[in-house]
Image 1 (cartoon, rainbow, N blue to C red):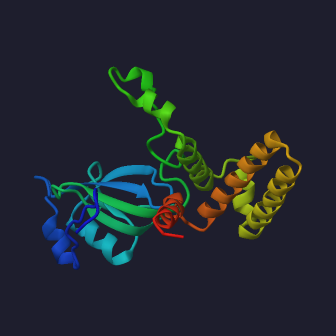
Image 2 (image 1 turned 90 degrees about the vertical axis):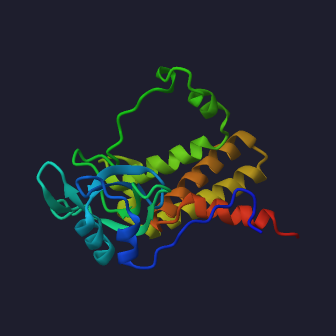
Length: 233
């Protein structure tokens, strides 16, 4: 019997089955939400027709249909900011696609990591519990940090420390993880809890930079922890 909350869906195994499963609109289009497969940040929304979906499946990179220019376009063909497809899903009605990608560089023509960078403050959303939920989520900071690190990786702002780490590469990041681990040990050995908190935060930050460098979602780490929590020791 399936575990509580577990959901199973239909798995299509051919391009023909996928094209048949999608509910195309009157113009032969379907909206496609593009999400970073690692950070889970929503990067953009565009439209696909049958030909662009076929090209996406066959090439492993995203293709869309431009409604303004009435032509196919290959994301990143000009900028180099291509999207390597890691997964493809459609919703319960079949009228929306979700494309999970590894994004090279920023997804927005403005140079921003995601096209959704204009924020609406929680307080402006009348009757919403968003602000209260954010205040009570102990681990919301980790999600925000993962998103910021992904943004730095995509945009590479000049002078940012995270940019420096990504440009130096995995060996430099590993060196920093090692250094911060040693600092955590020293702080704990000295009995300095304030310093331990500071050094632990540095270690967590550099570990998350390493996860981003290796394209490992934080969700994967949490999944391992969750599976271990159910193991009898």
